[in-house]
Image (tube, rainbow, N blue to C red; front, side):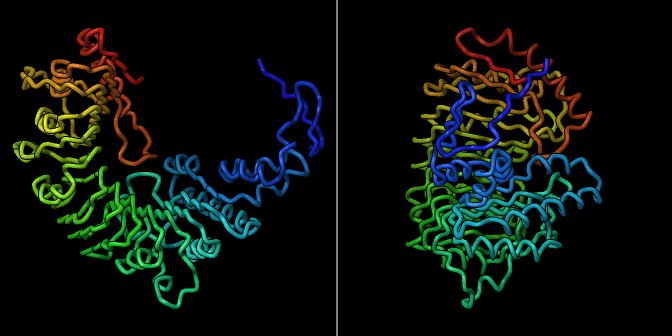
Length: 455
């Protein structure tokens, strides 16, 4: 049954339209309030209100937030041939350009660009940076992530942040910048130092997928930095961080990590296995914040035969532990329980299992170590495949968690890239994983534990 739309009044009145169920109270609000409301929407959502009536035609042009969300187009682009991907890129560029040219506000609070663009679009991207800096934007996000994994790990396609912006002759005042995110944008060490030195109120700094440096230092007693992400710095050997206000750190792909003067750091995410870095190398840096951590995420590779996890010292304040693990074959997951036992006040545990080269065998279930966990209430297992190692790992929590309330199982493949299409092979694996999950766990989980299997 198709529901008919009621006819809207042809003209909005500042006094409001009074007509029973169709009463228009939104139009009673002053323009300033309406602009604030529209600023909460994406650019497309805000611009679409211009068709309501004459009063709304230009309201969206005064919003203080420009969110050019290209997520839906990126999802479609991931399934297109290269020439069609190029057409989508051009459409996105024309759309952003047209909005920027018609926008009336002299300052904006947020600018977000999200679409796959490369160094071929250098002139356009540089122009967008200039626009953001000239509008004294406090929050700037440039996310040029590719639509699928084919382009991941290839920073040579990246747009390069212009060197001329980092010279003393630049005419832009960046003192308003509080949050800066650059993904798939190549930045030099000089560029990073430029932002740290010229943005005294910068609290959030994110850089993903870049190159062009071997050592990096982010140090300063006056840094306002609270949230820092450095991910996939190809060729980066050493990172030294000294930031007294830092509360959250995410860092991946490096050989040496030095943490100094981080008294506020309580959330740490570290990759330990995709480069020369390892759990063994993490431990010395870890000592600078171990006693204060409340949340820890570790990205681990194959740990077969490794004893490094057993050397983790006690984490007395840790409440949440997340492990992203790339397993091969039927590797046992029980070595990961060493980290759980070291977290004496842990309340939530999350495992994200990569399905790379997984195989299912029917070996005997190992007997896990008996160790009561008196605070662990929630366990989440993403990527449950139904292997013996998967089941025995879940069994560990059932047998040892005294106050466990929820066990959440997701038998789906964790995608490498957010827009990766699900192939028929992956889909078949997920169907099998779902069948194994129900068969193995539904009758084994006690009634006092809520079992949630994500469909």
